[in-house]
Length: 330
Ligand code: F6P
Image 1 (cartoon, rainbow, N blue to C red):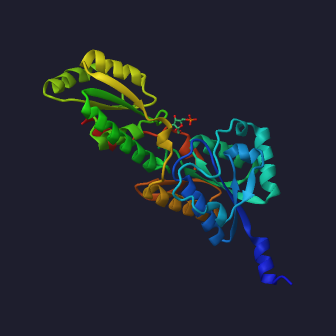
Image 2 (image 1 turned 60 degrees about the vertical axis):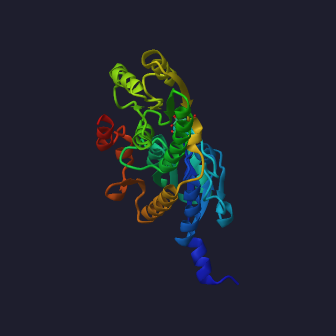
Image 3 (image 1 turned 90 degrees about the vertical axis):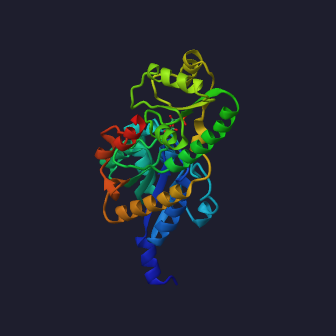
């Protein structure tokens, strides 16, 4: 006979699911691991939704256990897959998604993604009252209301290693290297990498630039014995990286090469900081949902962790920290 207390416990256990949406980041796997462990600690039954909102629509939802998350803490990417879903923008597909969650009695959701994913969840919540907490996760670090998004430290670490390696070859020749970082329309990755790598030039979408203003000084530096230049440019600036390289050749008189770092920035072993942030973000997200915060994003700022509204997070384009911008202009 089943013990009646155990039976009651089983009946009252709530179900919670997690999904990853948009560009993956190193830090998602540590977040998945802690999600399973912490949900179970809080007497919740954890579920994985595979392949983001696409999987939610297609009912790719499965109960998760310790076995699913063993050996993943050191791996980049996300074990449950991610996607950019166009279908989730459509009301009919959101209704299907709700039906799938209802079938499994899932009433709470953690969403690892960017502001686009949170805006989608906002609609979902308004229509179907599925409680959720967003965890800012994008290497672009472009989400308003949070100073930090999961995955940024790991991406910066890869960029650092790449720039250091390029410096070795740049210094062996007399060359200029134009290194392009990701970031979509946000120059955060490029700016931090510039400030911490000793590069000579940084171009980001947020700051207007005039290459002419560097010409005199760069030519003088060559005359004084400089052998190489490193320029960090963010995707999203007005010009192509190849045009910056041409400028080095034509106006500064130095042979140049372009290195687009691309998707290597999104992969690799999650740093300690991202593992810790994954742990903290997930803890706060689950705690928030259990405390009745039905629709929020857990943000991290200088004042610590705070639950913010979707409106606050999605209504404004994030501005780069003025303190950092000041360092660029000095
Ligand atoms: O948002 C993360 C990001 O890596 C951006 O920096 C980049 O512009 C974009 O995703 C690349 O997208 P995809 O992986 O779909 O090519």
